[in-house]
Image (cartoon, rainbow, N blue to C red; front, top):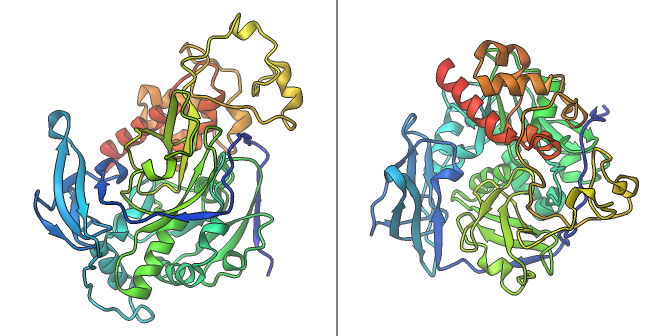
Length: 452
């Protein structure tokens, strides 16, 4: 039977210098790692104190609203510090790593005969559950609920995105094991999104899933595109999404009986000397990746994730737990252009045809920096969002409803079908320079607060 195919025309592929080469440098386990609560969509409460000894798999945080949902340590060691910010917000838990990692023992389980409840218990205790997301609201999945369907995307269409085919190349067994376990969590289907021209047998011949070919410009790889095309969200429906990295975490846990939060991270961007992959671990810093590997004569911005949806991090920061990419671009704050927008700008990326460079879009790879290139102004109903938004939704009207926190209009206009990352391109092309992803996140949080 031929795989289903989703083909979109709306969207935008952004070519940026610094695509990572398919080469992996294995980094040693660092002396110190940091568990950052903001990386997990929970209301964090501490399970540890300074001085506590931890094993890999020991609980560090739990969710205030659901204490069964844990964040566990990826390493063994001693809790060095618990750093707090304003109003005693937990900023990070710093752990000194043992030279030899010791692992927490979990109850053995027969995964082939395990029920959904058995699996949920095991994933909750090991800290794997925080990687399973729920729609609507894009929050950590509620283990008391059963999803109508589960979606896994193996194609990241964002700029300079890592190759999931390369990441999974040596972990075919763990991937299939993870998929087999995930399939038991729903009575519905598990959809596996695969790049249209992919010949990766690990994905295309995966069992216990329905393979869906994804064809089109970014954001075709976003799970939201699959959800709207295959299992449209209605009020009351529950869908789960799981990243490829989470599938590998679960597969390794089921295979070995212990947690293994190592992952491949792509270092990319125009300011990187040698863009490539690094084998690291959740909570590790980026310093070993970028040491002597960036053009540091400029003021640089380090981003955990891609340039559209990623988070700015400091030089001593670490990759977000769910991210597989670090992007380095110039801040651009030392650039001063004569006449500014009045120049021809043959080397600038143009969507609106404001510059002649739109004629050369497929022939040049411009160097981007972090400048906004304009000031905020009133929202303009120009249709520019529609050209890059491949959903059956009116984005301008939905964004206005989000700004005014109009629950009824947000429901009618499709807020349950999208999450902030789906508006990244709208934000990129926005003439008004609105922080649309921030607006969307605040609106979704408000909806959840009012509706649950």
